Length: 553
Image (cartoon, rainbow, N blue to C red):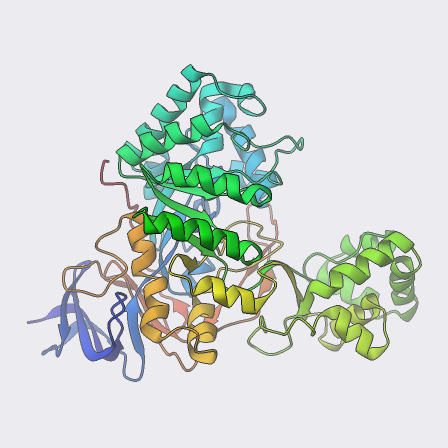
């Protein structure tokens, strides 16, 4: 029997956790037709000899809501084996939205997620009001990979309450309306509802985004409405009130599946709370970035200090910046302005203890010990941290980047977190903080570091955590696994060669705004809905994605 596509002679890892087998995988249309020894020839074939064949990876935390409007290839995640991306995290979405509220939602997304407002307003069609209409619009854009979405608390609350949503508690009548709208959005196709409790996420005028301090009663009412339609509740907690936040989530979990953002600095209390919930049979999953999370800076991105000369440097383009720091006198001014100001100097000495050069190799180094920071490098060389920054920058012709560890700083503690039965690797934040950070390659890092280099995970377990587990969280029964009848979202990976490439800056947003990109090495092929979207680390130009909607839709 002829098949549309056959992946030959690979090591098949099914995503469920079973031991790998040597087999072919045959695909007809958008589904897997056979796994085993496949006779005959496929219309198209992929040679997987010596490679691992896995389900496509599922990214549970992206903010590609805006970028998808002008980048249907959804870079950088599509260079890293992701075949399904969840939009709408952290309570900030573009629907539901009345025409007069577009500026408000775009401004909120700019300050919370560092996505330029101009790009949002000009790069999206804005041809919707309801959440279902938003999904219809995304479908018309023709994304490269599968897309699904959460409806956000901020947009929903603002739709019901208007300006009062920002700082006031909802009345009982408004709570009923907010919950009803949340349920309606899930019926229209949202896979769930996202909540943001982090006080640091604010509007342009520094007021909290709508919903930050919403009452327990409001959140429980929403969870009941969302859960009744089969949706999930996604939460960014207020980590200043971990016990209180987890208590609320425990009550939400009585009626809805729970997905939340976790960080290693709170591993022990989180483990205690979540383990207790799961012991009661509640469906609760956390995700965390599988390395230290934080910004990326360097000469090509944001320069480091905000004294007059550093601000002057920041106004220049890259080539002019590089030329400027080659001048010995200007370098001396840059150093002196930081070193000779007591407050600025104290700040520099403190923060550079968390800055780590990514190195000058093709593969960025995310795993230095805590004692290999920029501050440590400077101390060993008898330099001020600004001098070390400038020296390393010049030695690399301006290319070196510095990873600024903000959370999950202790990698040993992080390893303990991501080996619990509830904390999964993820939280790449693709599409957000675009000129400040780039963790879109988190799945590549899981397989290259935590499986191959470190041995923390077995291969079946590493694959399970980035495929079938997130598929379960989203309620996707036919993705995240390799089985006959399942959708043909598949990766063919050269594990020995697999790694991320160094981040680099581009200016391809509407209006020329900058953002980081990051490529990968080691992907022989990525297949989405039966079509090859990537071969040998390069996109094929095929956009085969679907908008995946809640079953109630």
